[in-house]
Image (cartoon, rainbow, N blue to C red; front, side, top):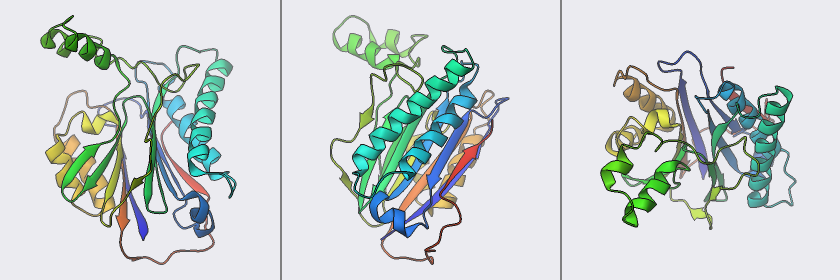
Amino acid sequence: MQVIPGNAIHIGQRKQQQDAFGLSDFNDVEFIAHGGYLAVVADGIGGLQYGARAAMVAISEFVGNYMAKLCEQSVEEALDQALEAANQAVLNEAYWRNCSDQMGSTLVAALIYQGHLYWRAVGDSHVYLYREGRLSQLNADHNFARELQRQVNEGLLCQAQADYHPDRDALECYLGLHPLHEVERNANPLPLQAQDKVLLCSDGIDGVLSAEEIMACLANAPMLAAQLLCDSTLQKQHANQDNLTAVVLGYQAEVTDTIQTKPRNRWWLFGLT
């Protein structure tokens, strides 16, 4: 089996790119044997002054920390450790800049290891599984909308009040908070099947495209799928289009590319400061 990555990022209609993403080295067979294939997406909180910096710091620390894992360390432990390190790095950066309430970022990470998917998520960036023409969102949003829906279910609000509440999209958990009180993770590793695709994206994409539109893009090869997700979003021509990022991991049945045993880089970070 082989994992093939695809990725695309665009600033949208914003003045600053506050998305970032990172990948481990998919050619480092020595690391893959005990650490697998890692992809991470972060979306700096747009209402905060240093959202872009928060996203870059989060990705850099998460991927770098995970790539330093020991052979005997479990991938679950390494993912949790990397997430804590990323959160602490954002907190440290905010302290150094004297802006403790002005730095924050979402983060979603996916790891494919020995044919299984592991993921971690904080905020409202999403991880999806695309399998046999069906799309499943694996994580929920950490925003006020969940509390509003709870109040609807208990009869305290009507659905319309919840749907149009001005604060429904406000994040309740993100990197840059202490303690990091809410982290989503899969309870058990998810077995993957040949031709599965895993999508990580910021809300600039799935906040615009329908599930059907996302699936139409994911029916293609990973790199084309990622680019189509960005292109399809931009074609909507939203006046205030958010930054958009898509990373697609294709789980392939057969090796189609030559794998290098001596990687040129340990990992990659993408985004703009």
